[in-house]
Image (cartoon, rainbow, N blue to C red; front, side, top):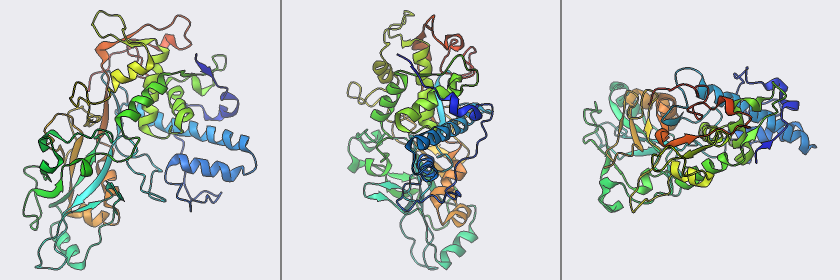
Length: 433
């Protein structure tokens, strides 16, 4: 049964016609205390700000946090629906791999929130001129024992060497969407992590003079390249999709200014209701698409007869994000990575690593000497800034198998169209990407 929540009474000033709300800052006049390491995501900052503003009223804290959730949803709406970088297409739900503004390292390195984790691998010059080159440095990488430092400490001779070859390739940004709960090695490893080759620079890379081999030394095994954060997993993704489709939120149809009458905001606020993760691109997008499927009476046609055979939210979620393996095969190692112009394309300077399959879950992008010099204090952030907004996570949607029968009495049935999940273009046929 759909749930009606009366947010409009306290949120009339946050109507979606003004989606340019500024993200929170930890330098608020409320002097938010981040000493406990809880202020390294927008959600944590919002919780702390509201607690500091209304220390003696839980009700006002909740109202404050509700209002901030709508601000986050306005930002995510802008990300997904404004401009050419559309978050919803006929064949995919999409978002940038880069974390949103506000995800930082204040307490922990919380970057890697969007079902894609990223880090840098650099082959620095010898520490002293004429010495032998050292081994690779993994910077800002989520590892079994924690996250490695994102900082590259450079000697004077190393700085001189990088300045001498500013355009040469000296490292890579590694973007991985390999789900944290998929344990099987990459096919290129021939069935065993011990047989994995090393990550390599793409053929034709203009390598620096001290890089003697295209091999970087980092093994392409599960320990190095599989995501580490628990919610970056196959199980978490299918669970999120199921919950987003269960009892989608509705607004107050008698109040034209209620933000929940907007197709995007209902789903985004469902992510807030579930996990307070409305500030993520990924969770808000999954909940928006899931909510639209539910309120438009959509199901999955398994035998191509035009009738939905799967209508239960859990089963639909498993059709969209199947638990692995399927018949002893990995059919979805992680959500494929591409760019905004195509699911099988990448930004300039990036390429797919040779994983031995077509999963598109591992992307490497060039880091030059100049990149390393400019970003040595946090090379992982250099990866985020240079490539993160254009390396794009694609959640495949089997459009041909989705059949929708909007309920006659549904509050939002009139806007369902042929493609309900393609928000703002439900009644058109957007090009596949």
